[in-house]
Amino acid sequence: MREPSKRVSGEVDAIDKEVRRRLELAATIGLDPQKLWPSYFGRSPCSAFELDAYLHEALRLPAIERGPDAVKNASAEQPARPAEQRSMNPERGGPGGPRKPDKEDALAALGAAGKSLLSPERAEEERLKSLHETDLLFTGPEETYDRVVAAAWKFFGVGAASLSLIAEDAQFFKSAIGPLREETPRIIALCTETVEQNAMLVINDTLADDRFASNPLVTGEPYIRFYAGYPLHGPRGWNIGTLCVIDQEPRTFSASDQQVLRTLSAVVQKDIDART
Image (cartoon, rainbow, N blue to C red; front, side):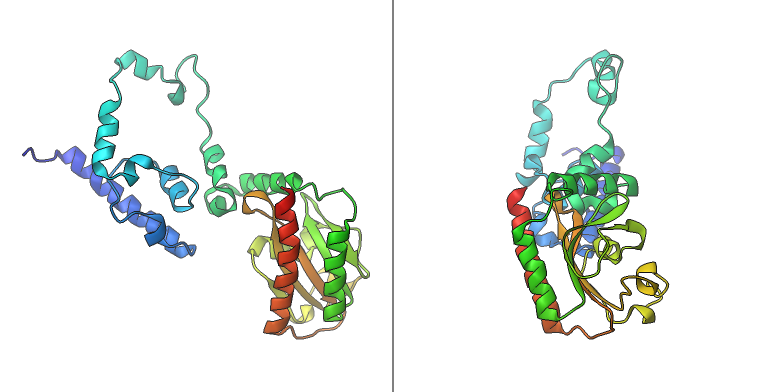
């Protein structure tokens, strides 16, 4: 049997390192490598994008899933081309061929799961695209959302409740009860923080939190002292807004309170999912 060449051995080592790195990435972001990566993974020179996409269940790699022999057979099925044809390959941006798709165009297919792989500018572009696809912005009040916001306001006995949408430069309200501005600069909106951190945000006392103590919405109208918000997402998992409650006095927000806010948010989310 022929011994593998140094070049082939080097490629295999590089692939093994890449696989390990991707598996570590999956574990870090809470994915289950055992579920997403077959134990019989075949060694194949996959691109970094393909590996990331596979880990996020956005791409199947059929040859790999059939094992290493399939990879070898698939390669053998591809006829060799003359060097001059390979140099003219449109996928490589050869003369007369279309431009090779930007790497971020491919990564964007991962949706919000691939946010860390995109530039901040492209991630925001994709998030705004998701927001507009919901058709929630600038389309007026809707009974479904008004009913949920009213239920949150009444249940928690707070000064205000809202379903907010974070657009490019401002926060807008799809539904709101209480002394809230119709439009708030995004840079000072507390819901912006909820959208960016992708988790429930509870601020028991804004004046005791260095992030918000000097916020104009805290030191001035509507004088927010308590805030609790839960993120809502649009197509492809991008966070587009929040369901939130605020008060003009500091207060506690128990685990059961948090569960109620999650449940109300789930009602809103179900409707958003149904319309997109």
